[in-house]
Length: 220
Image (cartoon, rainbow, N blue to C red; front, side):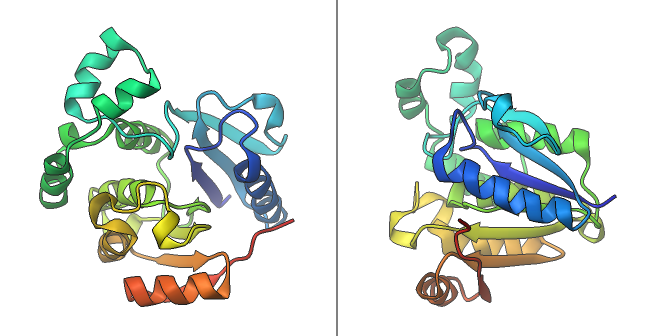
């Protein structure tokens, strides 16, 4: 059976629009015959997960929080996962720049490391789909780092949708901003699609990234 993996570190607690949109998209994927898997925050209340969804608790922070770099990962067993420490121990810009040139696992942020660990276990194949429906530059960068380390002809289809205008995205300047991370993901993917929530958003994203951008409106 083809699998549809929904990747959303922000799915935590009751999660607001993230939860509602994940549910609606998951219903459509389930109706189309896909096995639906959520890779979400470890603190997501399992009572909120639809019965047909396989929930994998993957992330220890959300897209609204800094990733921590290699120094933070080394110190976290001692200092814990308190939010203010994520700012103090956030990954450095030189780590991101070096990671773009060299695929060194020790340069990954902690959410990226968590994603790699899960994807190594579930092993999505070329008939599967990875879906990010509320994409930000950090999450798209995580996908490009993972995809770069996989055989290209075995990669799943990757579908990236953003619900934010570029200027209001969380960590909008991360890794060259959305245009930069979109270009890197496109360069290493076998099949990738981009979409935005509104026609205006799709036009802006297409102009900024040089990619074809579809429209995927918010579901009720």
